[in-house]
Image (cartoon, rainbow, N blue to C red; front, side):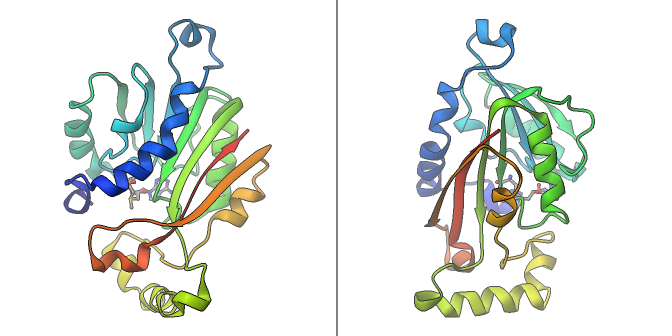
Length: 219
Ligand SMILES: C[S@@+](CC[C@H](N)C(=O)[O-])C[C@H]1O[C@@H](n2cnc3c(N)ncnc32)[C@H](O)[C@@H]1O
């Protein structure tokens, strides 16, 4: 993961900048934070910590990841962003975040995580639980090919690499042929905005990960 994410990929950063831009307009549910004009964000599956650059100044950042080996990389990355009050990684799955109180965060962020989790519905239930009313859930995920007329070969390769276990083996359980949107749509958010698009990828190896969804769901 560190090897794949250590160099910034400008085209992808541009997409992220646009996606996360509205975070800075969000007003906290917490009167104390509101007074200071900052918000509390929870990132699930933070990995090495690749989204710091897109978080608003002064925000409180809580992060969860079940893999303890990311801590060293995450801690190195967060040193570069003293403008963000980031906490240590809580080593846990997004499926059970009992250490985070109900309705206590203003925004939840997930990027490239739902492709590898065991129980998407359970994670989304937890996302809704920890969000304050009106809180926002920002997601960005690679998905199975959605234009089968144009890119049926990509869909076949996604199915093959996932079915044979090669892709999940190399990329820690990542499945190329998932679509989290039905689960997000049925998770009980009041509003779901979604954009399907082809993400820029750093090299041809990731051609199979180009179909993406990004969006914001409101509790
Ligand atoms: C492909 S990495 C993405 C990391 C980072 N979010 C990014 O955009 O680069 C997937 C991450 O999801 C984490 N993960 C896997 N299963 C999870 C679960 N059930 N709950 C939370 N995170 C999980 C992995 O440990 C890993 O850090």
